[in-house]
Image (tube, rainbow, N blue to C red; front, side, top):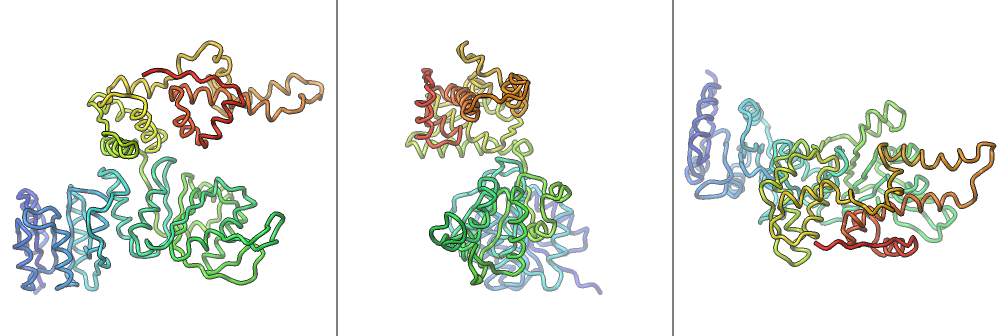
Length: 487
């Protein structure tokens, strides 16, 4: 006779209890139902049940708190945690406290059945327990189904050193994910070190990663500690890994294979003690096909992939993100947080957000800074999203024309070509072409940025990604006039 497995279910929602009882009963399980944590605890402490399915929010106790007690007296009892809270912290705490699996509500019944079957197999193990307590600040915002898959994978990665590859469009929050994996993982007390491959000259990447000895090359006047050494014991985040030069890829692969490296110009091997998290917005398989990325390095880095959805695929998260950004701005500037009206919110949800969360955050900061109203209106949002640069003074229109009706690259190329077309017989343009072209491009770019921020130099500097002192210096050198619009 087949041994019938008993499943204990605790949820204060009668409809969920009924659905689960019928569905699992048809699968041949003996199902017992409870509407509170007290009854479930009595069953578990009496040694009853082969698997537990528990909600988090119950009238008499938090299911995650009870999970700790369950794992102390019955560590081999698989517990599946359900929750409608659907945040990263819920998934992380469930995994940290020993849950076999975490399922966000609403969940797929077929998926639940598969999880139950795996949980009832011999040697099914839950995740390691820890002392993660309190209402930790949530590093990632969003409760959409698209983000639930991300949270569940991340929760499984917190207590191991598996190498992670984070992919996603620019502005989707790849570094936030990498930082969360570090901050809630077992290396959290050691350094988190990030390096952007696209921002470092190719000839300096190896020195940046592995360090160099004094005299290793021209200009190496002292020993330099590389990022691998800086991150010792912690996490090394390799951002924009798709932009890494081939020669640096080869050395990185060798380091990952051998577990040690030498500094540039050094001879003594140093052991690698870091967790590697890489990220890119590029399609690495396409780069591999083009001969621009090593396939063997790809498989070394892509042990556990995490793909971040673009904001257009998780628009249900926009209200939570807006609230978060308004609250952050208010806290930083010591003022009450702004609200947003329904029509304005709908306007924001209709955008495709090509710049993703970063674009939304910039807009919310701009709205918070530039408008004195307590509640941001549809008109405020429309004015900012349409670009307040449409009515520039007439003398600026000619400068803007180089960007009209073409891609930026096409426009710049056309603008540059006129200098050489003016000298058709092999003559070269006058010296100083580089500076003249930069000025011609820089002036309208800065003017447009100042116009968009209504003359606010601090916001314009943030928009351009410049240090505010650098921007002030350029404004003075290029004799750019600032026109401040009144709100």
